Length: 353
Image (cartoon, rainbow, N blue to C red; front, side):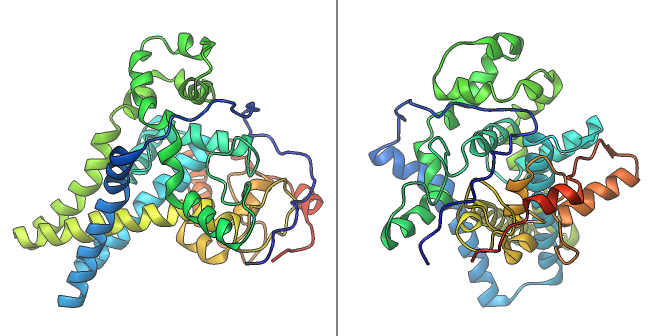
């Protein structure tokens, strides 16, 4: 990988909610020793074992049409929840929608197991406030010099960063304590990381039903495994079919969605092209765009984070944006935000590989 040039010195593009957070001066309370290894095993090792079970079954007996359908169907549902729900709706509020659909997007996104909708949104808003700058929670390039350091940075951005973010395990407990008093939480002057995370969410924390739905995160993660198990069992009327459904629609799907989504942090800032000016190293990558339903047009997104669509060229496929436009036609989405052609042209710069 060649040395990265300095990013284009264009004015920062604020989050659509106007969040400008100061870089943290807090010393992270990182996990260490056996506890760190245990968390890494639960978050990465268990899904990997489930994925390995799928590989073993495939080599032993192939995969049936039913189980392939469960894998693809659950993948598309969960990735839609991540990209359209957690990302474009909750984190960036690029469109508005009905309360039932908002609840459905929260549940589907939660089934990815990447944190509750509110935690995911807070982490992402902090990322946009400091992309590839001090304060970014998962930049693969910040402070990375030399091939080995950049290699380590890739793994850091892919999945190791969350071991050193003390707010992640505390966030849910903080919301539990303030379910009836979100105003007090937003007005809090405490400067620890978990309170700063909460203060990025004034729009979401004031929605009581949404917060209560968010606090059932564990139920929604479990639902992502129960659904394919039930479908597999009922379709075959056997425990063996239920087990196959759990492996393919549950564990294999979970691992693929997890790693591909996390790759937006690593691949999305290191591999691809930068056709639009931005203050960071975000890159467009067509393979990632297909796999993530549009998030792989990452430079487009960072140039215009408030946009509900990221297909700024005729050949760019943005399935998430297409879904939002379909919902608008059905009257289920409105106030869809997107830049004008003139604004996109003004951001155009020489592509960089």
